[in-house]
Length: 223
Figure 1: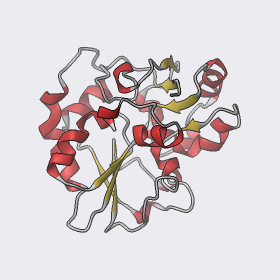
Figure 2: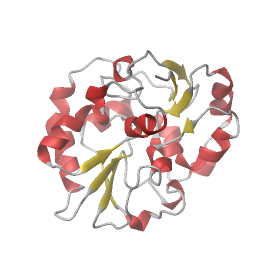
Figure 3: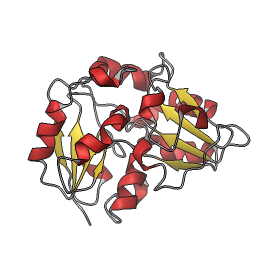
Figure 4: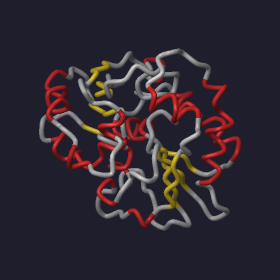
């Protein structure tokens, strides 16, 4: 099994089991490296060129794990720059692993459930994929999970309290022809059991991506 170093945004909100930043999501306790000044507002943007990547590059130099991942899928445009800093495998976003995970093109077949659909732009999709290859659905502004993250609410919560709102948004990503739903947001995997109860579509996320590169790293109940 591999030990994961998580480059976590500079946030305080509660990380529940199944979340990229929760120790219970892994077989071996991860290394959590909080990246200074990397707020949700600064990283979840439709202009990724304005992101200050230096704190992430410095964080990679500190990482002691066998594989390094980020806690936000909106960092996908920087996969190559982050990888250039280390020989360890880097996963900036599950979006960078679409080819490895054999995701088929076609908005009628594959959907992306993202934190904010208005800010997920062409730049976030790596070759050979394009934004038009997917049905892109975002968490709605009144979704309680999205609100907790945007407001960086530190209080602990029970994920079951937010299930209905998450599944309501997930449902928008599932058409009769949908085969795969990609969870861009790394805070969505805790809700996979309920998503699978709603639909038998294939669901992939950052945990799937980690497990693809380093088998037996993710606690099985969260895959």
